[in-house]
Image (cartoon, rainbow, N blue to C red; front, side, top):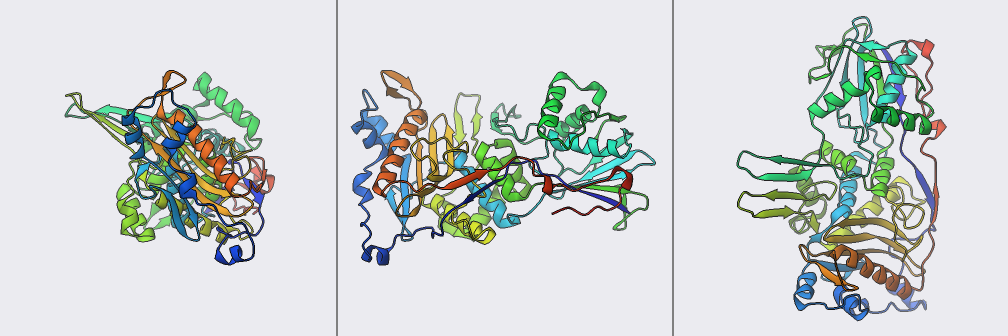
Length: 493
């Protein structure tokens, strides 16, 4: 058996440094040493909605709006392992803050250094191949397909008669794009379903047929290829490949008999980036498709619920309900005009527990970093645009038409404090500057005020040192020699 191992890295990696702080540094003993006693937040932060009225964000707030919003908003923070705030146990829509829950599940189940493996079995003599992927690589997009074709061309393979793949393998060129991929279908009862998007086997087949026939590339694929060779210099600038028969799904590996690989088969192994880099990427860019692929490669909603119960207990699980890994909603429209819109929901207190658990994984992964920098973006240089906390906040934002949420760890002069602000008000418009606007827009302004107040009360922000790196790091690639004829080549790292 001849093996070629290719370690494939396409995601941005980030590094940062931070002083040796514990998650919560201010406690009773430190107060005795003379630090300023913490203000009473329950007096300072009366509620999001009341703050909005006091700041005169609304021209004519109606009482019904106030009542509805109070039922769907929550603010909380952690002090001395106690959750304080306003309605911390009220389930509220999470939107993309859901991705932090999915991140924790993946890191807990697989580990920060896990790499998704994709194996290609190749019979060069007969011109047939088979692809296996035990867990779906959530970021197997067009760059990896171009890379695979590039490797085959290096070994003078320009045509295959046919190629099959296991159902776990998903080729989704758009997986890294920040789009909301939704499926829209009507069932046999006339109910229209609009839900999160996961690629079907048929779509994997179609995309493989498009990308693996270079002569038939349309302008969209050609533009995609030009973009990839600009950013990924390891891909050959000229590719040539032909797939004679359409790709097809087949779970049984045709090259394995009685548990052994038959003689004369070449193997190419593609490894993804480490999981912590993937989670960093999907949280920084809030990529819904990749997050849902990662979620469903680990199991379904029922398995996720069992994980939450095992990890945090029955009460936590009972107040957390998910319909997707990314935070996208699931809507159903009935023929009689009724509709149901399901959202990912959890409580503010639960969200703080998730961040605390992430922080424990971070400390084990890299003890020098005291907040989960390796898994989440930072307000400032990363696309967590939160002007109130430049370089002070590591976390995740979430936004739907009726939801605006933010949760993470705030770095101030006094402490590193987990904080969550969740706002949702379904089907209610508000008046702002004399015009009707979505609740989410108003909530974002209120959240900014709340974050500014928090930083002020903790004595000002404490800047987090943060450095970004290029997407491609040369020492993270496996060297391969076209003359090696698929002999085993060890990874450089």
